[in-house]
Image 1: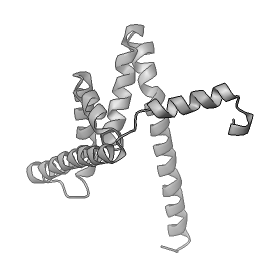
Image 2: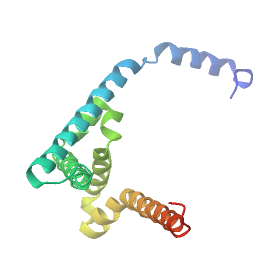
Image 3: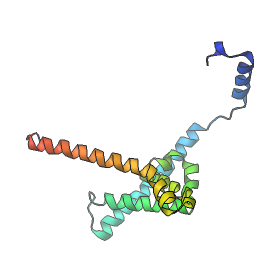
Image 4: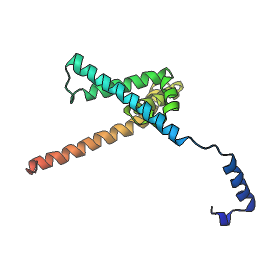
Length: 156
């Protein structure tokens, strides 16, 4: 509604609401998100170096086990309630990395565990993960198809 169509009572209430509304600390939240996301990335890089040093992976092949490990760690921390506190403190800094995906998947499973393992945990866990996995697989298929066609046509 625009100001012209609002009643005087609505306009008065809007002014009162704006007067009492708490201002969000945007800069502080951005700094927290930056540090939390950066810390998660540092842990991920340390895990990558661990796989390279102890298991003789290359930089290119260490990515998959690193992602799996990071998702496992975030799911474990979510189960113990630690990741939720990290998310409350760091905001998007904890949600944007791949660990946020693990947190979202396991949170849905934990929330619906009273409905049983199959319908509750399994069914609700894949409400989020299913669409992400489907999009990833379909995107990989399209990219592979385009690359194959370009190789066949001699472009690359």
